[in-house]
Image (cartoon, rainbow, N blue to C red; front, top):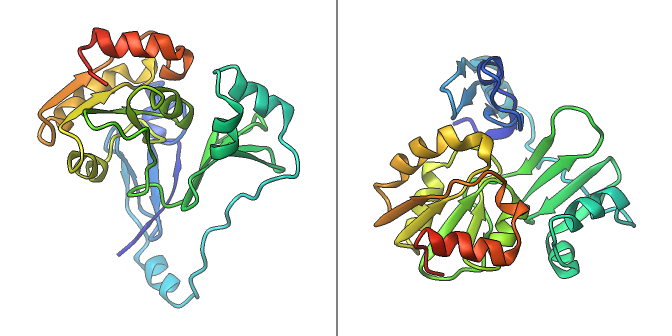
Length: 234
């Protein structure tokens, strides 16, 4: 069986002006590629898959903390109102120019080098997504870690680090939660309706939250009010 390696930009989505985050297309160890947003598919190389069986497996090279935190990365986090403790508990700066969300078994890094891709993931995200707050009524799915931390001040939240919600995550969350909220960034509003239909089979209630800004752009008070207005009890 092949295994997931990393995400990159989907060429078909890009032709339509989508996948601006550059991470819709999944690449697997047998070199096949699949986009969970549009269904684009590239066949893998079966020779490559068997060749890898002959090579000793090594874990992917993780980012490592620098001695100091880069000023522009710190300002980026501070502009969204993250506290010093939230930054210390969840992020570090890698000297190669990446702000790293560190979930131990996986890392999702934002590229500050003004080069493509904007985000790079290392380790295995799927099955290890971090749930913040862990209240028991609703859980809110968001795209990025900053949004998850801020929504997590109010209600359970989890970042998918992508625009597509994996079935595996829905099944995992449904074991602990009866109700789900989906709050993706404004440029993913078209996808949210389809994602909510996909999630409906797992939860008693699925609510879509539409806003003109990313979740991370709102204050804690505003997030509380937005959830309240949607009838999401926290």
